[in-house]
Length: 74
Image (cartoon, rainbow, N blue to C red; front, side, top):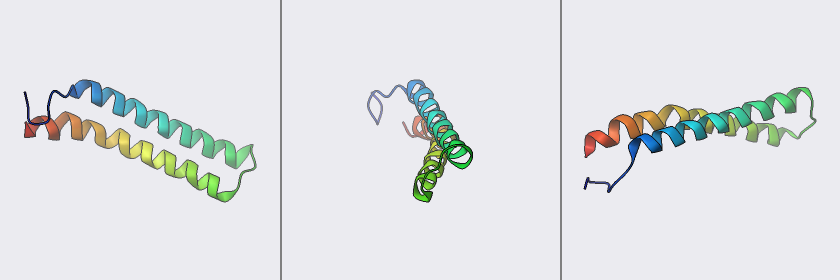
């Protein structure tokens, strides 16, 4: 048993990347629709931008964290 228990790193990478892509897609689609077709308050547009940013951050850091850093520390 490793230092962090019995973590399935490939499963965490796949789920993290897919969750990041889904968040980024929803944020970008909502931002696009709110600018062009739907009238929304500015704070809701900011929430879509924040959602897309969190999705991009999750998409970029999950493979680094669960694919490189954590397996090396075991």
